[in-house]
Length: 338
Image 1 (spheres, rainbow, N blue to C red):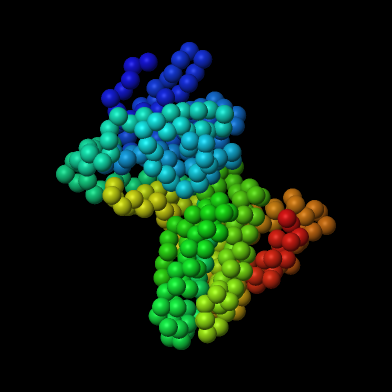
Image 2: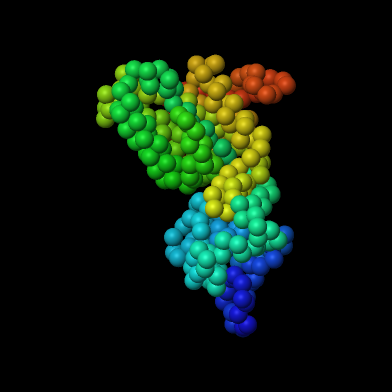
């Protein structure tokens, strides 16, 4: 095998190593499907399994695309975008590849990848990858009231602790905090091309339930004027996923109406006096969960836990149908399905 002068992947085959070049583009996809840049005929690999992105400063990111069996770097499963280093071992299903980058990213601020102009190192091509995702937006209730009644030091420590624990909980259930926004967090779960499976939908609900319980206990640790509560919005749909930042400040996020609606759903819970709101697509997936796990006799479980509402949401011309309930309703749903 002739070694490339640029970044590449080495794939072991029966006839020796095969070199997969990472030069001449902005991103490359890997999976079983014929529509990928790198097609790997491994039945344990998802149709669209993962994606590589090169930035204009020579760094490469690996992003799992909601694969069923996971993406591993040096034996560790990754669910968030991760920077690759020369020699990293990548595992997709039962296939192993080795990442090689002869260029030292720290010394190539002006090196271009994928046709970017060397004089504009801040510009990074946005990835246009359409993915099925679930977006969770969690907001602390009565945050402004609390800030007026709490010493600044206590307030800072309490909110800092909340953000840290929120990140840990979301990571525990298979995602990462995409955005920290004032008194709220946004997290994204990326689903595979087959749709959102039962396990991932239950992980999302478990994450929200755990976040609510954690928040409700925070006043035992800090002298807060009242127990904290959260509201949550969950929406499932297609969005553009990728890097909207620059080479030195990458920002992997999701964009589109699916994300905007998740924020609107969370806001609607205040109007309804409830805790959690679900988009219709999210609710349909939960109906499948209740049928698969709770049995036919409890096929209507999701209906009893999450009531149907029609609400007006800012930015939408007509009323939106959604489902909503309390955290007690959510916990009941989980208790009956897990």
